[in-house]
Length: 299
Image (cartoon, rainbow, N blue to C red; front, side, top):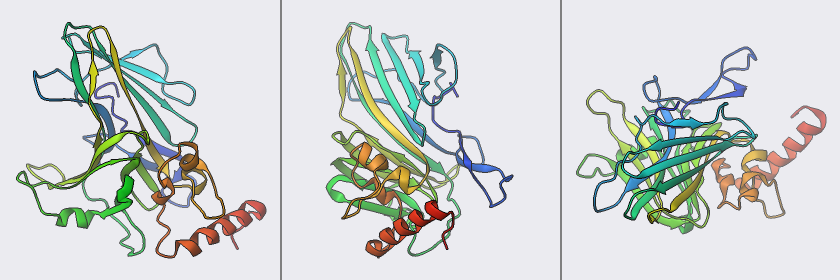
């Protein structure tokens, strides 16, 4: 949708809601205003000093060229704030589940401007979970030297509220990723591994008729754009099924590459909850998967 330019309408065509192949495809992300909003957003926020007119969820972007987003066909969107700044956003997607987003700011004004890139994954309403003790569903991330962080929806609600009533956990790290996971699917922000992140897990309780909101987000270091110059920031969004061959796997004697190896990520394989006995479950899965692809049967 050109309004807001969020990534907020994703169905997984290869996966169905039931074992019936004619059942509807799994809907992963849905826009604001739908029954269960769940979306990702990339943008800029201003620092101290004079306020800067920035794109918001209501901004109407324009597309350069034509055609829809697809593998091998990125889409570039532009918006001019009318005050000397032009914003460009180029979105591409690969043949699996990874979106890449390049944000640019062209400063046509007479003064330098400093902006801070951000990205978020937001879910409105508490989803129905299986409630298995050994299976994590909720907010998740591997956050630099803080390691794996898992927060269920209930744990987020139980955090001590701040002055505005919100609950949050904050992290100042590098080499991290974070998002929200279901049993089989996930939406996760995947910034560059050398980027310094001010990352957060947040929960805002329901108010004024709105649903409660769970969110993972990060803020990058400021980008100062001189007059006549262009500033940029890059990020990624994983939005799909947690397939081992796609996510990747770390294993002492080698394993499947996937995004974890291709992008040199920090334990992206922990997107999949292998449980306490991962040293048993990981090789057991690899063996079962090998024979399944060999003979077409897990038995």
